[in-house]
Image (cartoon, rainbow, N blue to C red; front, side):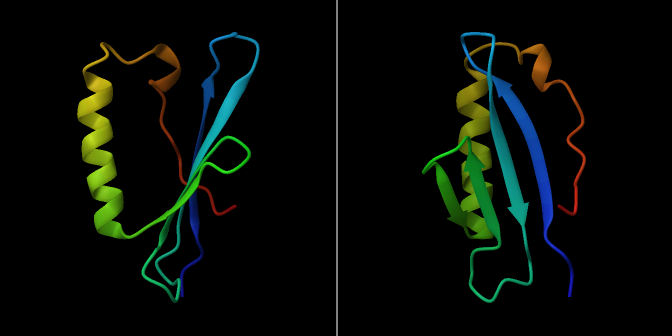
Length: 84
């Protein structure tokens, strides 16, 4: 049994004064088929994903966001896994 792993990053909001938390939890020991959990900010922007859905999302987002230009500086960082 492995503990869930969390990956987190904050995205600056357009106002420059605040930011939005983005986090992903990976829990391969979940009893359902949704080991990936995506959360963006507070509120209801939450999504449970199967591994195949997570890969498809990654691929689509990668291509879509790349079409917007070069990555901003805040994204050029290592996202270290955490246990909590």
